[in-house]
Image 1 (cartoon, rainbow, N blue to C red):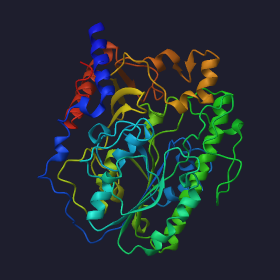
Image 2: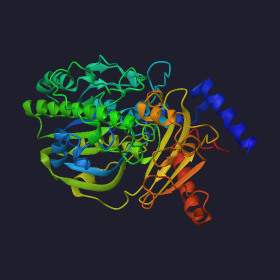
Image 3: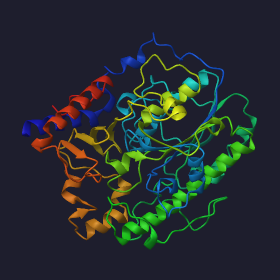
Image 4: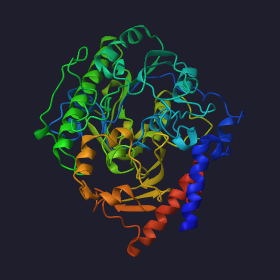
Length: 495
């Protein structure tokens, strides 16, 4: 055991000393192959406009169309009534920048090099040789634009034709915190664009707001006394919010959920205004509209974890011409599938450099089909000091998480540590955080195996139960194959 922990320690030291060089260059060559074409071939003249809306830290717990009767999200509820709502949609890592790199490339972040956060001293960035969705679409004749929170680097890897607004990460003065204003800034582009277009529209809401350290008061999630332009702020009574069962039902938690709901309702108004702008430009009918979040809600036990609240997310897609209105899909999709799906709708052949995801266009057009019953996830860093590599395979019933550095204590993100939700439990010296023992939350074994049908809160780890040894080994084999097939630098990190 000591030898194993020393090996992990040595590996961590190498990574932190120089992330890219420590990981080697074997996987980099698959992107550097000059024989691969720069652009996939163009296939179809029937090309819809495409709008991809990404909110920040919005869990599916806070949406009317996903069953919450308290939070007010009329625009997103209407979008769901006009399109397809996915019950089993997952990000591949519950961390902002890494997740966004997956969304825009179709590759897991361990292959893009965007292992962690882009901003400040974290300074993670995507490998220069990676090709992204705006690159492919622009070269196929789409006019591409982005507006709002970007949170990726370098911009050269994500070459949008137009930057409507460049939002910095966690900037309280950013227009990305003012979602109606951000939507209105898209008006000129929408009215003037002639070619089929792609807009990447990213909100700061409902991410926690600065300052993070507000104990004993709740974090305000970007809410402020002075209303944002065009926003009708919706305020919530902490006594009436719904506390997700993975969180402790304390006054501190309820206060923060009330603030979180307010930020969600503000984001919803920004989405509504953007859709109004698309209608006003006469382009709504032929536009594919996708709404997702980068990761789950910004509470301990969700964001930066591979537990369900961190990765099972809202996904609402309105098809052009309003086809398949009010449909619910049970297919299991992940954010690695978004780029292949968007390219498919755009009539652009899939790149010859294999993507890790696959198109679910057929599911959107025709309904659920066999073979969509499993997803994979890969998390390595959040901030540069929050190293905790995890790999996951999740099926309909069982889920396996491999904690590759299980000898380390689980590191909470800075905004979550300062949260009154966390502090109210720690300061009271509680033994549990929600349903999970605090010791189990902070110190995790190498493998976590859960029966999600019997244990949806992921409390009873079956990995050491001999009854489940065959299931454990089967899922370990799947994870190993996943890591090898995606050239994961951490394939042998636990040896």
